[in-house]
Length: 77
Length: 77
Length: 156
Length: 156
Image (cartoon, rainbow over all chains, first blue to last red; front, side, top):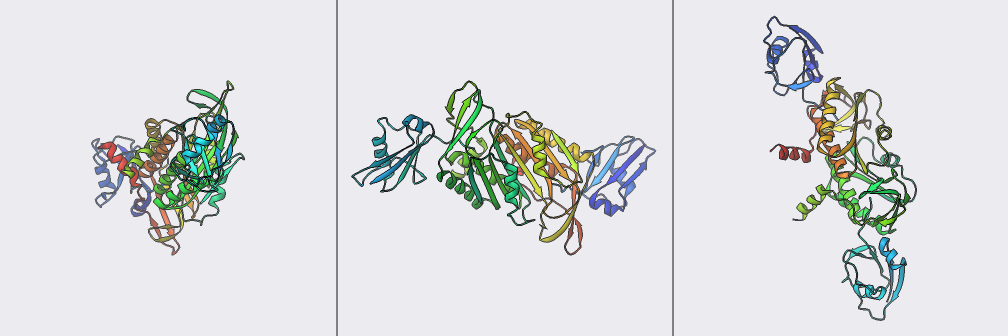
């Protein structure tokens, strides 16, 4: 299962990169599992998650080809 | 005591004129007295009154040189 | 605060931009602008043209009062009202209200207050000419229930 | 409904006027326009310039959702949102929201809803460069308490 991961704003600065491509052998993977693979630190409480551009949470079950984004609270407008 | 009277909108049409100059011998004159001098009909309940461009009511005591306006509810904007 | 009444065609966004040039740069975070246009219908009849009567002097004075009340109530940097009078046709802009503030909530509240109380208190009278050639004075304005409720709450 | 995000300088009133030309003439009684400009201060620090990051695709989708919610809730003819991204300086307009309706209450409610929920949900992130040369990501937006209360009431 292949997942594209994107980081924005202060989180991108902290990760030192704007995206990752992550592969899993298992089909049973959540957003929390994905985070564990891209970072050694626990995910900050305020960090937001989107899967395929819809807001969701870390319990979300992923499927092949999903695009997952992690970012801090939004500050537009 | 000389009073300038002005009428606006549908009331001007009904009066058939846009203003009057009215003189009183007495100094003890209210807006209601003034209306009695310019019209034979009772003043309609919805008609608004302004003296010197401030809203008031028919019990308002007039003084020499006042400008009194009668008009229907406003419908601007 | 700028308030004026004009018989000339109204270019609302030009008025807003011109007035904004007189404000200190970079200090306001937002402006809320209301533009009221003449519609081609009112209470079911087709309106061909409209003539707006006013009471010169009293009209400006009461718009200024409403703007001052808004500036006293909310943290507003400046306000603008330009109101057209005389003869106009459907789609003509009739009034523009703008309120500049550091925070958008103040801009929204002030702009809405001004247009609502202007409509309630400033002496203007609409006379509509219908497509059938009938001329009639508009008897009452449509309400903004949100603000009426608010006023009741405030005075209660 | 028109929503777009651009790196170009934003001429908010031109966007509003261009979009208004696409609407049926004489049917709307009013438009409420909010223009959010970049201020030269935030939380006490002097801001020299600002860079606005976004998530192409997700940003537009969520602005469209907010506009659709406003059109479902109020009797609105059309809405427009143009949001600038990238680098800008104080006084640059950053966002314009417009809502056209037959009655002004719907225009006000819809415009305010859109800017508030756009700010809450559309993925944009402000990065400020201060006059001292410090770069920092803005951590949270200022609130519009009027709307937060409203939302609580609605969901209660």
